[in-house]
Amino acid sequence: MLLTGCLVLSGFSSCQKSNDDEPKTKTALLTSSLWKISSIGVDLDKNNTVDLPYPLENCEKDNTLEFKSDGTGITYEGATKCDPDDPDTENFTWSFKNNETILSIAIPGSFFSGETTLITLNSSTMEAYLDFTDPDTQTEVRIVFKLIH
Image 1 (cartoon, helix red, strand yellow):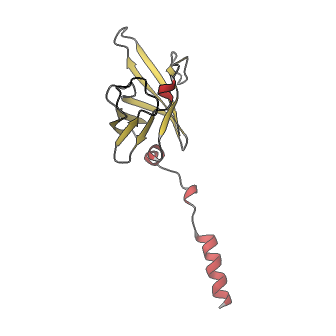
Image 2 (cartoon, rainbow, N blue to C red):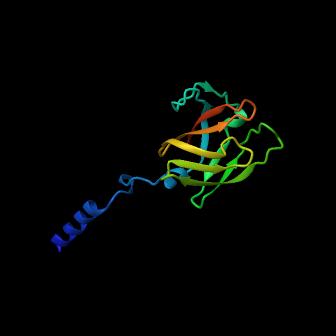
Image 3 (cartoon, one colour):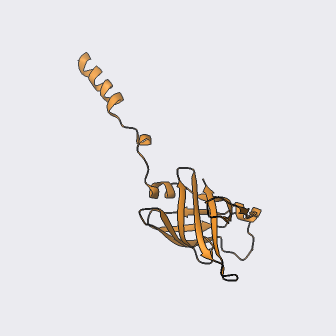
């Protein structure tokens, strides 16, 4: 009886696996909690660092994005609105492409919409860039942004 009790106790301590040791999928990392903008700016030399920071207004700093595992999401305007007529929430869609290196986001009327290339995605930070052509100057521009939990 004592031997059985010892075997059971040692089995619990040595056979249980910790889920913390298993790497999380990019979908799990993306959908784990709300994201908010930490920084954003223009990358002039396309080395994935901000050369011209965009000064975030207080009304932008409290906005969050929620990515859901079904490929949908919600933007939350936050307590402080830049425009009182802006909706409190807005739905969007997202998907991974190119072996989960590209995050395709469709947020109506947002500069976040498009094919964003992931630089970093971990449990606390997402950094990505988005290349687009400025309609006024026809110049290709790279925007780098960082989101945090």
